[in-house]
Length: 118
Image (cartoon, rainbow, N blue to C red; front, side):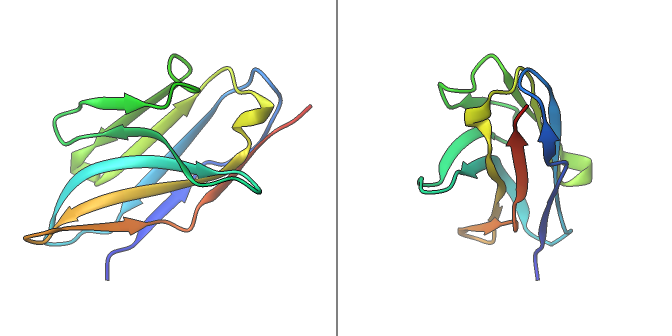
């Protein structure tokens, strides 16, 4: 059973920073793309940032220049450094991991709450 676990959420003031971590339990499958999504109350889940096995990254326009995604393949981990946080960044942040089992299977973590408020 593959498990995806997020951590690092919390309450910070506007302009502050947080670093989210995502760790995937070891499996025989190869980890493909890792990504962060978020979902605010009453809104659809949206992709925040993604990173491929070779380190290519993609960001939502709303976070580009403020957020940085990275990964450590040896640890099956991905990270999201979030700077200059705004109230509209408040959401539950989910890690999405694609594993290649001969076909791509996506796994989700349970999410970590991020709240930006003064």
